[in-house]
Length: 464
Image (cartoon, rainbow, N blue to C red; front, top):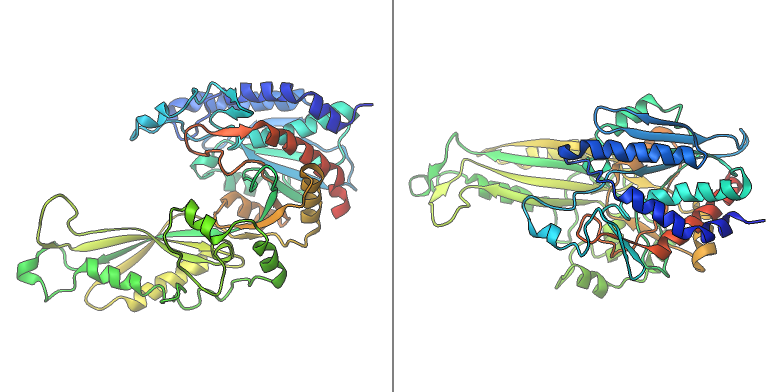
């Protein structure tokens, strides 16, 4: 009798051929001229879900691109339910502002090509390939055994690459339908093919603009210089007060809700095979900066930040213009860690900016876009243990545990609204060129991904 693991191994080439068909569809969600192709990708997914035995398969309309839902719920009420999240939309392969970008592709981005054990195409890893891992794990289990060890639901959206503007309303309207015991997201990477890793924390995000204003018009610097507070200078003075010499954020109350690292977490992070020198080389840095009482990996994964992303004000054109601009603006973002509340952090920052604004100018703090909640799944959670054992069973070594410095808003949505653990089980590699030319998925990582998820599905019941 063929096992699910054997079936997946024997049918690897067929799985890749199916994935190639999926990757050919130009489902670029940000491109209005490709609206039909995005719908085509949703239709392709629906048909594939039906073909492998999933049920209740629907294309759910939103105010933008649709969501594909499917499930198989015959394992029984006494079995856990796993919800798989993925996205079928992809980044553009070209850039209207950079015509050379498309020319950098060795093979056309929507004509998938296999070279040296890698599958090259837009969406290969982000996220069609990684989502497809779960479909093929389900397919392999069903083909080999005729049943599945747990109840499973799929929710695959088409707007992740444009910020998932319609996902939150969908979640709110379908909480009962999406009810589960654990969510699994495969939209990340591991350290290396022989160094599996699990991301157990993500930073949240709140994005702001700080506007300062002097008079109602630009002023001649000869006539008014020295008698008025230059808004550009005033903004620089305000921004300079947001950190102390150690890099610690000075906004009162900013750190009040931060969950401190445990001794065990610090030991696990210290095991990650990435030195400060490697970190500096990766960023082409000549020196490091920040809170000296924390290691580099702790700073970028377990500590909140306040970053000045850009500034503008006054005259910035070619040549000379002796002017005092009437206003200046800075874009400032904050990466947050558990249990920081983005709304609270925005209020604290806004109040602090108001308090340190000199009487000689006025200031306003605006919030941009939706926020992302920070995510933390305790490493001693039983579902994390099962996921870790699944990686070890396939890769032959325990995964490293990583706190990511980035943000994935959907993960926070799921954790907050469904109140269940969210596991980030990625199978990409750091050099997969996400959002860049020559995006790839290493074929052995796809194969290991299917095997890992089979181990996970067949053992997750032990966590409940």
